[in-house]
Image (cartoon, rainbow, N blue to C red):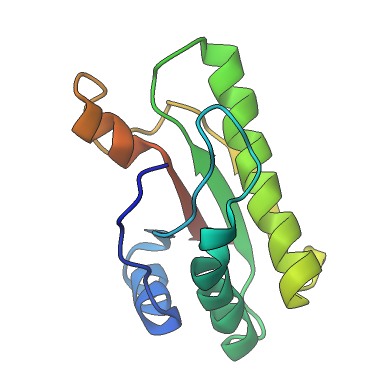
Length: 132
């Protein structure tokens, strides 16, 4: 995923969820074509965990997105695997109950921008949290 993004804090995540029911979690990084979280994702994951600790009743969908490059089925699988990786990290590393999280991948089906240029594709490679 794109590097150099500002990591949102728990309050900004909460505001986005309250306003739109979903929010992009900037600062979650993967190698191209892989679902292994990079170590530099920890600050963003900590903020999601903080949000979940502060709002004990909150339940989330963790949704992985990709750009449209490559084969459709590979992107669908990759987006799901990335969402699962985020969910598992929140459970394993931050003590969040797995019953509060559900991972899904939508591949390139919900683009945030055009896939015609790299700038748009980089916006489409993301993880969002959605209130359940």
